[in-house]
Length: 358
Image (cartoon, rainbow, N blue to C red; front, side, top):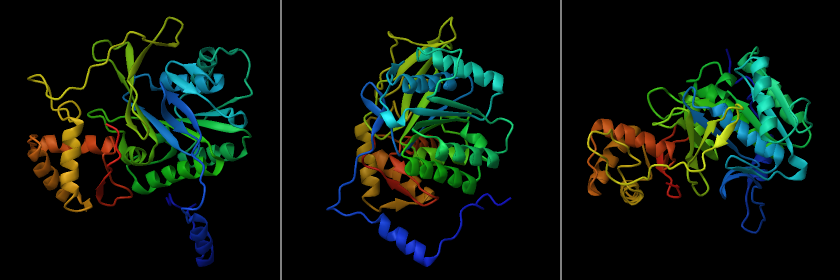
């Protein structure tokens, strides 16, 4: 099947027009993207961009995203999510690709209760689509039509971005759907928030589409069960372009609604680890050590292939007192990519991103 069938060639004349329209000028004025979603003052969502939530099965990702949607409908604060949508961008489109209409209705009712709105009648600012029975190609076409023909649209949630592709590890399909997200958000000046599962064995978002999300998303939220209490879910920023926020936690109360854990204490990130614990490139290496090592490695050359990168990092981290075995090196590179301290776009070589937020 031709997954790229809707990406057509353009003529030389069209390319020249687009080239000229894409040029920036230092004398020009370009508006800053309006900020519509934040957590305790840290911006996680702007119009014209997209973000994502990732987490393992049963981590309560959908409960977490329900809070984001409820905040948008309320145009206020739910859990720690604060929404401030412009008056002409108050409509929310929620797309579910996994659940039956019955379960989707439960999610819809939960969102309305969290927003403090009636849950026994439709709300003009929420449109909910249940797309489980359709193919990935049909889902893309349906969502595209809804996005371009829904007036006053400000926020779109796609619960199950994995179901917008046939093969989660296909580079062409992943590039296509991520390109669609960038096109839709830019054309309609909306924000899209997607949900994707994590791999079972590590913190990576699943498949090639997860890699593309990490590279292109404005914010990637990590939703995970608390290690000491499985009834509690913790939310943190795996990647965020703005200032990082302090992780927060919630539990589902007896009314089946997520409830903020006000007194929840997160573990402090301190260099070093207790004996017997597995290597953690976040806890065991300080931000300063990361920065010095990365700047040293990338002072030699701007870009590396994976094999060259591994060799350069092994040498530069040793200089800051962090010896790396091959296994530790693989885990380090995974963390550097997830936190966008190094980036690899469209299959090209790895480069350093000095403006990272640790």
